[in-house]
Every structure is written in structure tokens, then in C-alpha cells.
Image (cartoon, rainbow, N blue to C red; front, top):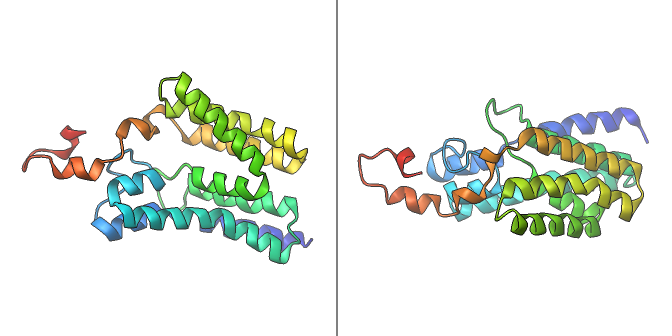
Length: 212
């Protein structure tokens, strides 16, 4: 495996991961900013909430590509080497969380993580969902608590089901990124999923911020 090309693609996927699909899709759909409305997250849930179905689906496809494109390149040019898989998807996730194109908020990369896991370790993905779902119920619907629990458990599942040092490292990296980027204020659940409807119902002349 040519390490020079691996590094070139790793940097390229960081740039690609930095593309804020939610920001672009919402801007084109409504003229508004996904950062300024709803939860403020530049991701799938807030794109649906602020931009509507079209913006949401465009964001979904864009975020999925941040997982599948790196893995496809690894398969086509690097014999699906696990180190290449980890570096490429990790770089795309880093770009999603800390985009060079946005100086304020970026995405959390959950869609990228899920589709990466769907290919790399489907059974670990089931464990990830299971922990998140259980903690979500126990914590009385706290997306923040369930997200942290799911990501902290991820390296454990990857070790149990894959015994791959590279994948365990990837799981730790993903968990650290999530912990750095996420906060209780960025929890999607309290914002609901009907933001655009509620915004349209605000009486004329009243600040929409008051309605939130």
C-alpha cells in the first residue's frame, strides 16, 4: 500500500467531509440558515426541520456519501485495507465535525458513523443502536445522554466483534470527536421536528426567536 497516496486521499476526504450539505441544501431551499434556526446543528435532523423534505433528503444523501465514498475508494484502489478504511472515513468524519468551510457550528457526523459501521461492522452498529435506545428510555428521552453512551460503548463492540486494532482506534477516535462536538444544547430531541410549521404560525411582527 502506497502510504503517500493514502495520505493524499486522507486529506482529500477531510476536505470532502467538510462540505456542509445541510447548510447548502437549506440555503437553496428556503434562503435561510440551518445554523440560525432549529437546533443550529448542520446535520440531517435540522435540515429536515428547517429546510423541509427536499433539503433533508439531499443532506441524507450527502452525509451517506461521506461514509460510502471513502470506503469505495479503499476497495477500488487499496484492496479494502483496514488502515485505509479507518483513515478515510475518520478524515471525512473530522471534516464533518470541524468543517473548514464553517467558522461556527458544524455537523455531528452521526449519519457518517452509522453508514461506516453498516459496512465495517454491522453487528457493532446493532449494539450501538441498542445502547442508545436503552439509555434514551432510561434517561427519559435525553438524546445527549443516549448519544454519549452509544459512542462510549462503540470501541467495546468493535473489539468484541472484530478484534481489529484499527477499528477499535477508529471507535475511540469517533467517541472523542463526538464528546468534543456534542453538548446538551445540541440535543435534537427537545427541538421537535416541526420547526418550519411552528415558524410559519408565529404572528406577523413577532420575533420568531420568541416562539422557540
